[in-house]
Length: 247
Image (tube, rainbow, N blue to C red):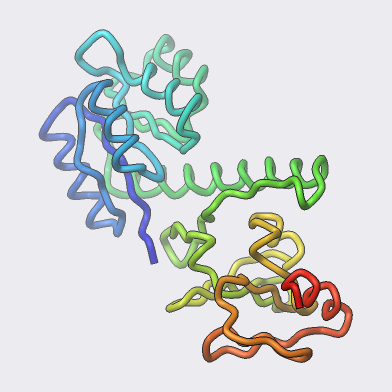
């Protein structure tokens, strides 16, 4: 399981180190803190964080708002503003770039955790809404899905690459997402959840199953075998599935 990687942009070294320690204690994976626009751009390219904690007031000509604008335009990941100020001007500038959360220093460990979890939840919900809109406007063959998803388990969101997922199994109003070493349970229908993935890689085999074709080890007219797991093939899916597999 890949824990959430968090970028830290903070020009006060003591605060940056405290943030790093708190994030580690909370079960996240903090990237090395940076303290300027230039370093932030390098961090975004090299570390590829899932979310960024972003101090608004940085030394130098470009501040946190400039970094936020770049994140919105180019990197498309959630970010949380950190600031010691809550004046109207700062709030107005913050609203213009739509941060997922806004934390006023000093804040507590619980405040930080809550802000991150809500930011990830809201951002994931926003992406899901965008994807649902895209599905209604495009055919399945024209839809390009992201190569990862966020799944919440207990108190944390986990970043799961599509390539790690072996199969999906529908169980009433839930879907089991099975990777090589773990199974996650998400609230969704299988039909809706499949819209998140590349339709050329994830194929429906049964009303309750869909598989990642990269994990197929053998197949017949009744089952698809993924290593030591046997997935049934429903009659209504058999012909199309075999055709998609070139059989």
